[in-house]
Length: 105
Image 1 (cartoon, one colour):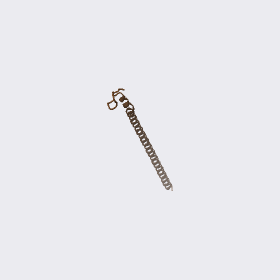
Image 2 (cartoon, one colour):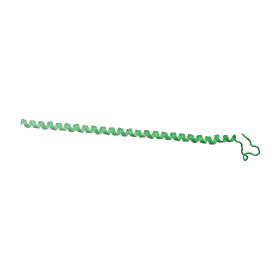
Image 3 (tube, one colour):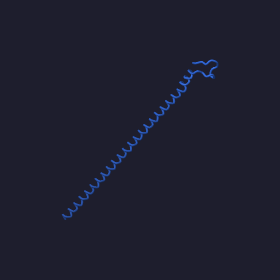
Image 4 (cartoon, one colour):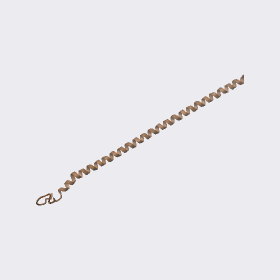
């Protein structure tokens, strides 16, 4: 009788140990999965933020280039409209431009 109780106690202890091991393994697996998911989410968020920053930098560079091109075009237009006609006043008129004497402005 005593031997059978001892065997039953040992079997119960073994079952309890197996249950504890299963619980520990499940908890460890859950923790590892949660950590992996968190790391993946953080990496994805960081990559998305980096991509957004790169896109913003590219847009800023494009805007700066467009502004520079517009300034250059405005300068060229100013040269064409203002400076070139002013230079023509200092030239001697050709015979077709003036009748009689040539006038110098």
